[in-house]
Length: 363
Image 1 (cartoon, rainbow, N blue to C red):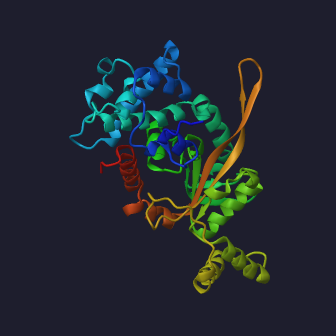
Image 2 (tube, helix red, strand yellow):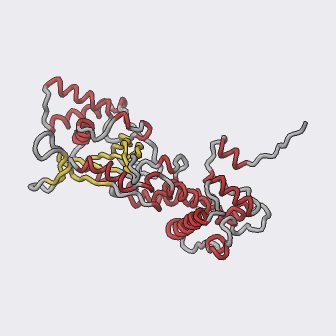
Image 3 (cartoon, helix red, strand yellow):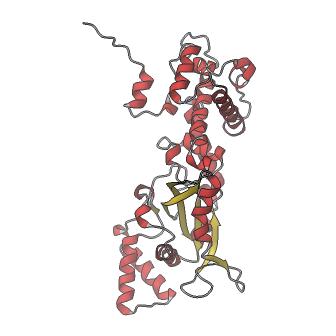
């Protein structure tokens, strides 16, 4: 008995070979019927008008993003891949990206790049955040806002209660702007280890404190006032490049051995000395981000909150959703705004990485 020993590389490499389809340089779809079958397995039946309309919308979005964000000056998409009339059938993109007959050499890489962008758009458009953006953002952000008020004398943001309890003066409190669809697409294209379900920072807050010690006070406040639940944190998403937790506890133990309370000057002196003398033991936590500058210093963690959505029919939908918390002292904040670690530089490095990935050989 003989067996067929021909296998399609892309399917096996993606399913069990650990390769992302965004890193493939071609497909293996030779005709329109095969393209429609490919789309059906993906999730869209283009024989259905409502599905075809969605795919055509995603195509338009991908074309716009390529033109506006990823193409360099002087580059232009071929009309065969961007113009619906020239394309005639959306399945033609898959045939062009495969180029099995060798007739589409000039447009093959463009069709492939466009499909990669469309793939990311499709998953983001169907992410649960896209269905309930305002409900999710409100339930995640409102609890933080309830503990932030403006001091009428200093005009500073204060974390705490106006009536009583601990108060922490902040240099800034920022609600992270909801990541745009365009920004999300570029981020997912740029990072090989990410996909739509792992885009964890769509919603977030940032606390800019007066000093490093206040950064730890903010952490304590968040926990003690049930604004975050540490069992809901995502362990592999933690970053702390400001001050190591192990040395912080040792510094606090030394101070507490003298008195349960200490002035800031003494706290700063002990923390600085502890770090200088025991730097070799410092347990910083750093999650690699190839787009951040080397001097970007902050604390960051991703937590999750149970979101409740009341549906029209009276039932309630519940699911956990992630959000990001960033904390940094003011000196660090100012440094992070400048040079290679600035947001503008970060975005450009991310754009170039996305461009290299979708075009492969292009720079």
